[in-house]
Length: 153
Length: 153
DNA sequence: ATGGGTGCAAAGGTTTTGCACTCCG
DNA sequence: CGGAGTGCAAAACCTTTGCACCCAT
Image 1 (cartoon, rainbow over the protein chains, first blue to last red):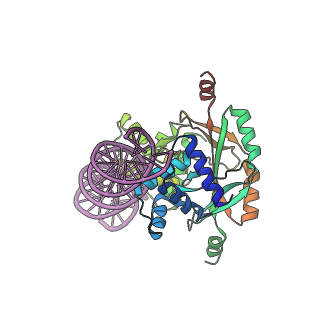
Image 2 (cartoon, rainbow over the protein chains, first blue to last red; image 1 turned 120 degrees about the horizontal axis):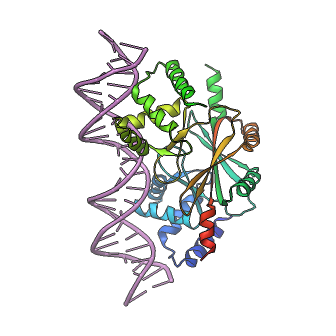
Image 3 (cartoon, rainbow over the protein chains, first blue to last red; image 1 turned 135 degrees about the vertical axis):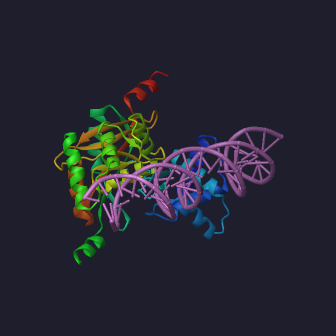
């Protein structure tokens, strides 16, 4: 989805709930759009803002990130390093889902696209009675580089 | 796996790394074994310990829980309520994997057993080059009770 | 103009750490 | 016995909150 469409989506979803479109909200979304495939923490976003000489308070960053999650524009996640991380959500339903591969040696997080999970989701919904709206999958293991390092010792 | 076997496993894995078997470590494991299917936070464990008039410091509870995770005896997880939670890990490889269903309305967390994920895991490993050692799956949605409540309004 | 949004600083909650003392191996 | 493990309190972190001021609608 192009950046201009994302801004449009933000406007729509804010309006629907009578929220205001402020410079801060637009700028935080911009930062996330400029870092695809990364998983930014509130502090990361705050840093990126200062680099842009955009003066937005840290509390506002926290508030905005959570708001964008509520609007379904961002997805919140965490990889065990003690803080929440955010990235642009997979908006289109027919888009490939993406999961995370977390290296337990170097900590690197990479993305993996796949939709084998649809089957599992349907199965879970049928058997459990839950009405599933979202899922999150994390795989832990050793990335290629760390495997090589381990072998060369 | 019976409780006595888990204690045996703890002894083995501690010994292998030259760690000591202390009363505190045994007792924390006991607490976790006494709460199957729950997802205890450090504070929860600390509370359960005081109920048992077992006097263990909160810092030790934190240290012990992390140690047990390193030993592969516990699994760490979090459900977005701001603290880490722990439960006995699925030790046997041929055991059914268990996933978590998190109600986004009432917050209830229920377990779901399934091993459809083996297929996905193999696929991910083949395509990504990651050597996968573990995975974690969370489904978000509405539990049966909350669905009913929403319909009756 | 008016109520939601923001910035700042303070407070809150969870987890980690430093250090003297304890106790397992 | 010696060093890992523990308890306590303090510190470190991330995140939330109260309040006066600002600015989209």
